[in-house]
Structure formats: structure tokens, C-alpha cells
Length: 522
Image 1 (cartoon, rainbow, N blue to C red):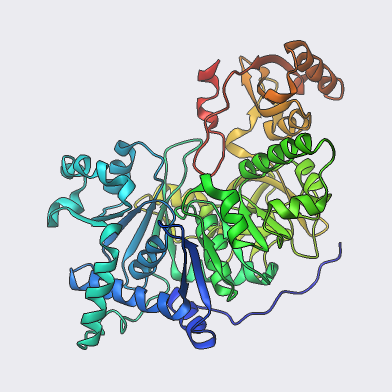
Image 2 (cartoon, one colour):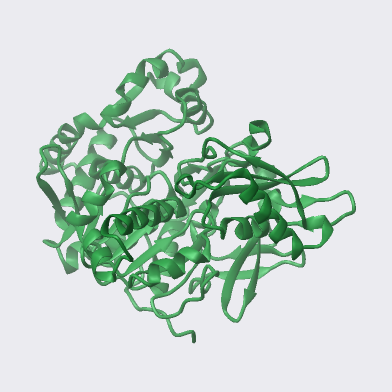
């Protein structure tokens, strides 16, 4: 398709400025809504959200969390999580969103590495608090002032106390002048290939990416994202971009209720990772069997709330076959690409400008080029400040003003294509470079394959396949599949070893397969 200009919205310079604009333009509009514990629908207006942020921020200030305090956020998606994130960031403090699926010892280690002074958490994680208390020596910042836990079960008290302080004339938080260049979020990478690094993001970084994303994609209805808020795609695109578009954003509190939530929210756009697309595809197949034939677009619309038009997918690679499959039901999957260090989006297919197999045009306001080695390099206001207390890694990643993503790609026409990852690159003894993702795409194109990972064993290419259980294909089927794939490949790219798995691969919270554990599973 032909490229066209950006969608136009007022540009924001900070999270507070974005909130103030919404309150000015649409104070009584619904900012967020969700299903409460009693099953009722809870709505929060832009005005209510702003007041709650100011109240919680004032409460934190009164308890001496101000200008530089590091506070970890551990919890399921919730309105309380969002308000607390804004209250931390807008007060000159630093929020550390934590992956709640990690073992508690990992979270303690990250809190220590991130110099946390406190932990805000959902009641689901209250049982872990004694472990924090017994490990205070590992968290110097918390030990220095005494451990401070901030349970979201006390959220209403924070709001009430903060509001009373404001009414009594305490405007210290509200009057705080935000330095948009200071770190406001410290986000640890998922660590699929190595030790997590702390990505330092500023309000300028986050605001820039919200501006950029809103120029590439236009939202005209409700938004919904089941992705965890600790993940920057889920937070910044799935929630904050919707907020910036002055549209209601539904908060998915439990992904197990996703299909029910979709019926309630009736979104125009979903923000997901490929694993959720794959789950939808399986549900469509089950539904087709029940109805005794091919699903119609009307049936799929009935399953997805009635208003769904777009699904923005990121976080990991997505097979183009899903794009074609969903299009026949009237749903456009807009595949995109991002990385935490870029706050996070760099490219996404647009409402009226898309190319199957690509991750779309680069965002307006971002610069992307391909190095001589084929690596994707990025530049822009959305690029991180650096890695926390890791100057060596920062210097390696940021060179001559360009961020080195570690991903391999190409630009054809005006579309960006991802071809692999430098750290996954297989280099044979003969010096040949092989991107495993390219071969995996061919294996995954077969409907009998649910998951596949290509790797090397003693200079021989191997593939582990987790079969699609419903296909019921025997081992001979998959060997024949490899034989067909190998016919079109040079000898050094041929898959010589096949391992069939009984269990799916282990994934991180964004749905990426953790490759470092693959060989150990043989």
C-alpha cells in the first residue's frame, strides 16, 4: 500500500501534561473501566483519575517518598497499579514495574539491583512479604530506612489521606516541577537470552513514544489489552496510548476472563502478543467444529464483542498465516515491533498501510537504519537513557547516537522486516551465518506444528517441535516435513536433527520462548 501522513493529535511532553489535557478536554469522559470484585462495571473518569494520582502522590510525599525514591510495583493489572505508577513518576520518583510471574528470589534480587526503598503490591502477593522482610540485607535502600510495604488493599486510604492533605493546602506534589529528562521508570528486561538489565526510561522517552504511536495508528473506539502492565508494550501502547486518544480503556484484571471481558468492553482494538493470537486461532477452530463448518465473520464478531476491527500484535514474531486467517473474518492484525529500550515501539502496520510479513512502517519521529551487519539501529526521543549502573552495557548499546537493538532486519519499500536476532544467530564452523527464525517460520507454517525452535548441536542444525495436539500427526509426518523444507535449502541450512516435545516451551511473561533453556530440554 502507499504511505500516507501522520494522524494528528496534540503533542504531550509528560504524563502529567497528557492527564491535564484529558481533564481539560473531557473531564467526565471514561478513562478506564473494569469489572469489580462483585461483578459490577466500575468506571473512572479522567477527572477522577487525575484526582486519585494527585492524592496518592501527595500521600507518598507525606511519607518521605520524593524526588528520587525507587518504588517497585508488583501486581496484577489494576486501576490501583496505574494510579500508583503515575503518582510515582509525576513526583520525581522512579517506578520499577516487576514481572509478577518470577520466583520471589528473583524479585528480591531485582529490588536490590534497582535500589528499591518500597514495594507496592496486589493482595495476591501478600504472602511473599515475609520473604522480603527476611531479606532486607539484600535490599540496601529498604534496609536503610526500614522496609516499607505499600499494599494496594490500602489504596482507598492513600487516596483519602492524600485528598485531605490537599484540601488542607498541601500542594507539594501537585506543584512539583517534572524534569522530563530524569529517569521515571526502571524496567528490567525479560532476560530470554541473558541476565536482565535495568532500562532507564524518562518521561520524555515515554511521552515521545505515545506521540509517535498515535501518529501511526488512529483509534476510534474502546481499547483493551490483556498484557501485564509491567511490560512496556502493555502499559504504554495498550493503556496510555488509548488514554491519550481520549478513548475508554478496559483493564483486564485476570487474563482467564479475557473472552468475557471482550464481550463487556466491546473494543475496536486489542493489543496482544502472538501467544494470544494463537489461542484465538485455536478457539476459532474449535468453534468451527462445533458449528460443523467454516466460521463466518459475523460469528467471529459475536465472539469478540461486535466492534473489533484491529488487533495490534507485538512482543515476539508472528507468522503471516495468522494475518491472512484473521483477515477472512474481517479482523486486521497490525503486526508491530518494539523493544523496551525504545519505550518500546519502533514500527507498526497502520490502519490503511500494511504489508503482510512485515512489522510495518517506522513510527513518525523515529529514525531506523540497517547496519552493514544487518542489525536494526534506532534513534529518537524514545530511546532510553541507558542501563542502570551498567556503563559498559550502555556504551555497547548506544554508539554514535544510535541504539543497537540486537535484532536483524531489512527495509523494503517503506516496511521494516525482522529477520532474526544477533544473539540467536548460528555461525557454522564453515563461517556461514544462519538466522534460526527464518527456518522456524517455514516449520511453523505447517498446521500440525504448534511451536518450533531451531538451534545447533555440534555444528548440526536441530529443531524441537511441539506438535499441534489436535492434528494427531505421527513422528513420520514431521520427518517428512523437514525433508520437504530441506529440499529448498543449501546443505549448511538443512535441519538434520528432529526432537518432538511432549510439553510446550517455557515462555516469559510476554510470550517469548526462553531460548537459553532449549538445549537443556533435549
